[in-house]
Image (tube, rainbow, N blue to C red; front, side, top):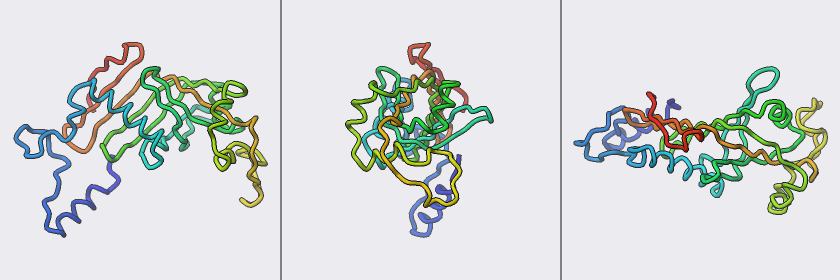
Length: 220
């Protein structure tokens, strides 16, 4: 996974007379900076970091985990879209996303609750993939969550015509609030696949609910 930022950063450092970071160098005890990812030295530390970064996404609008990619399965094949992370509960092994109940992803999840959530956290060079089963919540069971959404945010749930309807021009869509179309996607995480990049050797681990999140190392 390389978006070109590493090469650009290296070139900038060289032009400024600074030593370039060796992103491909293996971890070594004699490196002056030591292990750049000490939290990933052991499985429990990596697992904790995953949930720490997810929780940050809930509370910090600028965090990488604030806008993960949610993948679902439709009749036509896999679908993916950016969503807003609203809750991350390590103890329960759950995450939440809010949605308009008229969106395609709701129908897809009702037909097949299997889904995945992807986060690339560049700051800590951490890729997280959550495999989960999603329950669609609506009506009275989401009333408390609805009360916590500001008026401006409520415009995300409603609008005419509904999501995915063909229109002649983007101005033909009217943003309106529709409480009955507010829903919550409750993801029960079954597996966490975490990969630490940015320094070789890369580190990858798999954590499974069925194993009590004990985790095991995988080849990256």
